[in-house]
Image (spheres, rainbow, N blue to C red):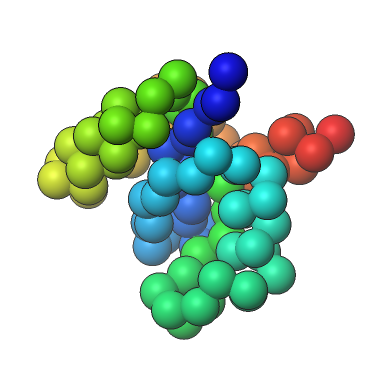
Length: 96
């Protein structure tokens, strides 16, 4: 079964946030880290994976991303800190 992910990247703790959807979380975060993904994340140095959630259906992932993007910033920060209170870069746990 294919998996999809809603993910949040940050430039630093309480820094600039970026939300995205992917079907390959490790590959996508690596692209951000290597600055292969142009635009916003490269410009603002947003490459720390601080939150992700898994979905079984791409429509659920896209709807979830759209919903979270509409949230106030403090709600997004609360979401991150509920699962990752120290804003640890989760990428290294995924690749271990």
